[in-house]
Amino acid sequence: MVERYDESRLTAILKATADPTRRALLTILVQDGPARVTDLAGRFDMSLNAVSKHIKILEGAGLVSRRTEWREHLIVPEMEPLKAVDAWFAQLRATWDMRLDRLTALMEQETKQ
Image 1: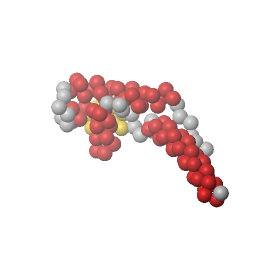
Image 2: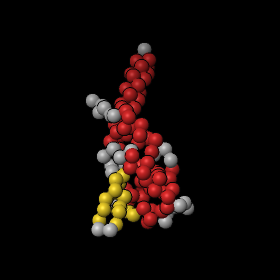
Image 3: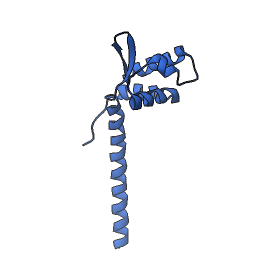
Image 4: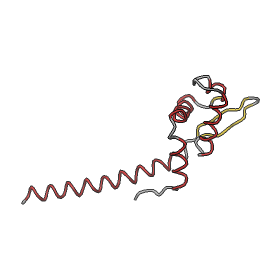
């Protein structure tokens, strides 16, 4: 059985990750772990304010959250929302697999005749 996904959540995630800078930020956070906005901004050729705006969009989609440790404010990757994307792709794969199975059955039927 194919797991269902929340359409509005999927849309928010896909919109947030449509931008290459936001995908790069998310990739960095997943690979390297939580980071300060200033540290993330140092890895891009753009202002701190621009990076902060990208992070707010990722945050709005639930892909990152903010955590405070002492005086540091860290951006933390959140992997749970990506389950919506995975469920959508699983549904597409299942549909594609069914079509391939039908095509294979038809081809086998033709070779038997």
